[in-house]
Length: 104
Image 1 (tube, one colour):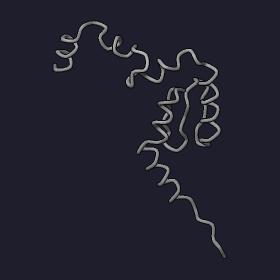
Image 2 (cartoon, one colour):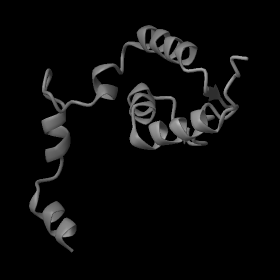
Image 3 (cartoon, helix red, strand yellow):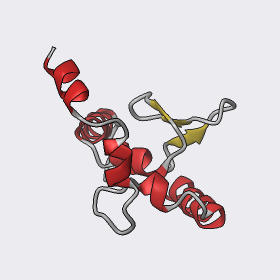
Image 4 (spheres, helix red, strand yellow):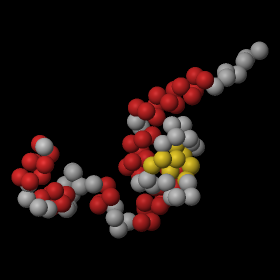
């Protein structure tokens, strides 16, 4: 109910008006880079090359082989997942489960 009251109190389009201000810290990454396709593709290729457990699916989504999560191919979401607690926790479990090489 509180969310509905807050939405009713806010003027229509107030959120987008705030987000469209150029240089505002809350402007989303997607809006700042919407016209920069070549740079976004280069960043995505670099991300895929550095994260060996990231796999591109036929649907276009990116699958994390460590956690099994499927994410939209958007860099902020990918960086958030790979830097997140769930990923770190699962990666640590996976490392502990791998057999250690003997030095003998």
